[in-house]
Image 1: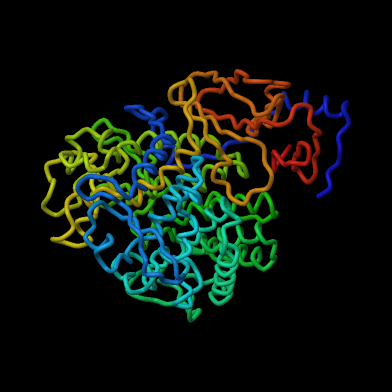
Image 2: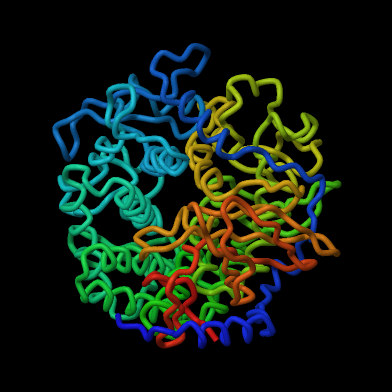
Length: 571
């Protein structure tokens, strides 16, 4: 891409002009407007520390205690004649472990999520304890069945024990979304490129066959046929297809993948009612914003964000983002059912929503305030999933919390117990999990503790940092922006207070200028360590640390510094 160079005198004029410009007009998300400006009680835990502790605790084959260890080696050699890792979905799940179902029943949602989470907080999972946990993920690539994509299980023999496998479409698509994120971090892992290309080809062909109609229960990627069952249609899977295909396009440059991503997004956008099912819709909003910025498309980001947040989904009734204060606890921002027993939030869904929605702000800074406020609520409330942070009178099994070793959370929390006869005297929020319902009469009470959801803590851990002002978070917009173009360090800071606040912003590099993407102007020049930045009341800044005195270039409303785009809609 060619850019027009701006002379020093023109640059000075532009700089002086932008000082007086209004900020990027912010767009509200009505569901976020209903959330607390400053959630209470306010307690932000160290999510990076939590993710690191989860990793060193869970990946211990010699861990002591009832129901431990949480991992084992599956030597059945499905898809690849090599061992893979087994990890419990929930504590004590009687279907799992080395001595049940040949050690074959374990889920990609847990295994891939834990690898991704650890990687995001700085660990190399391809070289840990003399094992390659990244390479072990190959076994979820179902070549033996002819599907040629990542699945939630390694083989159909155990698939019906859990979710997915030709029944529930999101379970078949989401492991591929997870895989592509892992692939971005481990591009040289043997076999990953072949698998990534196979997935892209399958998704591209599937989209061509669907031809704009995703109203099916699942898609058979072996026979390449859409299927309908008793499970309602999941047209939001188009968002998952689009995410994978656009990632493949950015990685491999094949224009067919871009065509497929655009086609899938058009199918999603054409829906007349909210098609949200589980957790793919936030990826639709992200892809819409990113492709609008990078490819010049014109997808309706606001529509997809409303679908994501509103909680008025039809098929998965009420699925969305929760809002409320339950007996003094702000629980807003968590994700799940807004109607089940008055509301039922889930840990993994909350973690994973941040993955696409936070980096979306890079491409659509009009949502900086809304996403900043939502994340403050979500990050604050998510500690309540963990038994050490939820008061015992709000937990179903506080007396069994020691089994979690401080790293495993309840699967969710609800406004009222979702068990028909159990825990009915507990007042909201009720920390609980569905594990005992999966195998009634056999799964123990401790299966309410969710290993699979807790493994995704690294998503928060990589994004969220506290500042010196309590309640003002620094959100890393690059942490989960996979297959991105070159970018400078970019952070969102939202001020939840009714008065302006100042924070100290540390810059990258020996000498940096600081550009605010929301104000579309420089707020500091030639900074060597840190600079104080004032954030207006109930507003945000998106600060980008760029090389000092870098060459400013503008083309088609894109502002680049030394050839790296920092603003996709520069005015």
